[in-house]
Length: 400
Image (cartoon, rainbow, N blue to C red; front, side):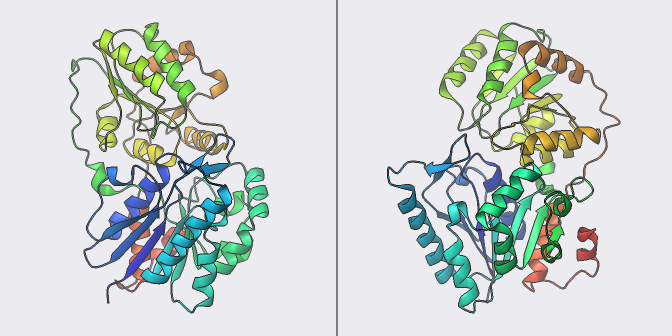
């Protein structure tokens, strides 16, 4: 009988969670497994999925800037909305009966919606291997400790989960130490390395009708659901010609971008031969590869792509409601892999100054950045499900 793997994607905001989930799902798709992704991202079908992958499309949450969640579209009480999603997830697990369930970031689900499912798996005798995956950095230690204590996360990780995957390297950020994981949970942790599929690193050429004798500077917001003040600063820099006219500029606005800012960018594009505005592309990494400098927020997926390409990007980290991106920017700047501007120091003038500096920056000595996480995660899933023989040194290597 073919193996069944189910993913729960915590995608209440932006593209990061669903993109990482799809990368992992694609890495194990072999035409034999049945793979079900439970998510609510409206962009889930915008990225290619391999055969054998299907989606359970849940009604969507929308994460507010204060960190709270509300129904994205339905005008019903949040309690009813959460209960509806919880029942959909429980029904899917009862019917699909996965051999492995991989939960992204939220061990209890958004607002505890996975708790009925977790209890069912535990109490029904299902042989489902339970895995919770975390990105490398979550937030400041104090905030995570308070959040986990309030939600009962440590208890849930101990009670319901067999393995905790951390999609990063311990040498860069020691997840267990930084977040004070007790020893009984530390024994469940596997550091996989950074998740970025190798097949996407042979970048497809991204065509731009720019003069080839001018470097390309790309500004990206990922999904575009926040960071609008950064777009305003970038557009002001262009409008005032603070970075000069000898560069080509691409604005990748994202599918959730603020409409007035998109319209403002389009007006600038119409007036300037060296400005292009894009809403969305599934080949963002091809665009990054074509660019001399990429300016980006500091989300996990974008950083993995840019560091693997050795782009020495300029990061404009989000600092609310979490400081995850700022912490990541500080860690990797300290390793000579990127530069960043703190939001309090950002202005059209400071951005233009940094753009000129980094366009001319010599990248020949930028350290290589390993992104072997997708292979390690795939090996873990395949070996745990018995789809291939165990590699003797595998767990020892990625635990190190």
